[in-house]
Image 1 (spheres, rainbow, N blue to C red):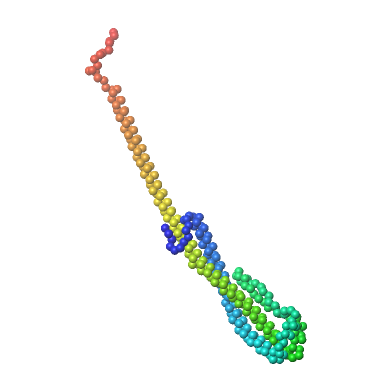
Image 2: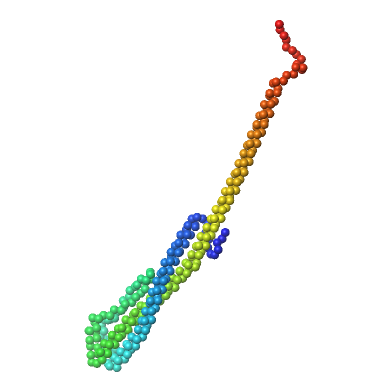
Length: 262
């Protein structure tokens, strides 16, 4: 017999049935875990999508303010880019990378760190002649813009990674749900049907063997009874012959008499 649908090519034995049932249970457990993982990742993906939308809107506004502040600095002080580059000795804005674990997926996260200690020394003389207020305002505006840019970069990176992981997880979930589990179920049904067929064949064979043994025993008993009956008839025939010969005597044919002595 052959089961419907796709199944694995296995021998129909009790051990194979137990192993296939164990594999089916493992596949169902794995499907449940992957499904919950996909749901958690999808929830985080939607949250990140909403944050990206807000960060992009915020980025547009902040960059607009930064461009206006730079225009104000250029109008008030002229070209001071060279002076700013010469006055800076070390970076006051740094980016630190770390990882965040979300359902077994490590998402990179970038965090902006602004050094507040050097703000009073590095730009102490910048814009001293004129436009100092515009320079400080532009510096603060661009600092916020960089922080927003770092946040957006972190969200975009997590977005790309989550998109790929969710696709891969959904492919695995669909493969387990629509290919592996039905194949194992069809294999189990096939093994059970084959074992039932083998049990019926074995039961029929045992009945045939038992019936043949019964017929042979009946034939043997009949032959034994027939042999016993033939033996009893033979014994009774010999007994009749011996009794008749001892009781009869032929007086007419006995020519010679015995001598009589007085």
